[in-house]
Length: 467
Image 1 (cartoon, helix red, strand yellow):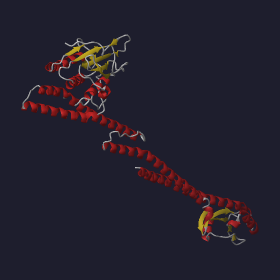
Image 2: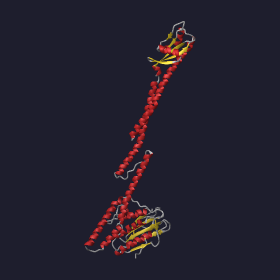
Image 3: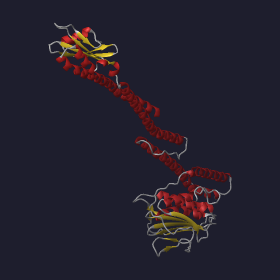
Image 4: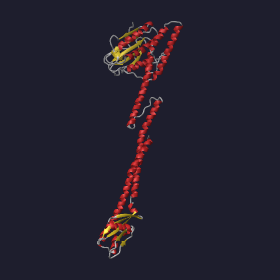
């Protein structure tokens, strides 16, 4: 593209220069010729007054000499009754040309060797016509023409070179952004999803770069959403798998029971593999828009009803509190249910049978807190458990369950913290911010404070009772 622009500019500029320089040069030549013949006419006019007064040879020779006879002036007097024809100076024009000017009475020019001559008729006092011949050499007619052509050629060449340089710079401004756009497209096509293009150059290329970057961002986002969807769906399978595993464990001995347990374990391993494969996705969870959300109390009651049957089979005591009235939070119902299933599934998966657990909902003015606690062994490293891509340290954990909960809380401006519960095990606190602001005074252990001064909601130190 760059050389194409240079060639186009070179051709256009050359055509423009030729179109203007050649006519201008011809005009200069014509002006030089006119100037030479104008000078010859002035010389001939200087002799005309003397010819109208006298035709004496000596007088005329002095007049011709003073007027420029040495430079090529000649005077042709016609013959009359008292004398023959008289020619003063060197004659260069042909006799027929002189005779024609005398007969017609009009000035004329004619070509002669080495230049041209001006034949100017002059009326004598006797009524006859004399002819003044002025020689104009070729050098006089081309005086300054060579210099003018050289100047025109120099100016034309400078214009061509300048236009080529400008076209080259413009070509660079267009080609480099285009090359970077091509390179970015190749990088994106090779799988380097971080490839982006600087938005520079002409307007069209800047718009193309903006569109490319937007497309790349969208591709990355779509891939991330795809992996997140695979991870979320796979993790939601953990809830029925947990039930299947526990039910299979109660089938007793026998080949069929052993095959069932083996199949459930294999299915669980495959689900874990899918979760680990999809974990590299960029976290993304959106809160429900204005007017959306769900009733947290209703969702907690529904999920606890589901898990209570399994808890009774395993002899687990459980308790739910704070769900006696509606508690609106700005998250989707399905997302909250998935988060609760992830936490409760971890309780059943990583604690022994008979371990008690509880779910509490605290409704404040600017935040809602959901607590899931158990009486298990606890989590030795809460930071590692919360880190995406790292499990809690228990065997078989992918660590994605807590990440799902964290993303859901952070979508509202809240967060998730892990601490020790009064039951002796782990307590997971989910903070849902109702107005989208970041909550203050958050930590892993101790009390959780609302923003309203003077009010304290204790989540870790309040005694509890299980049914």
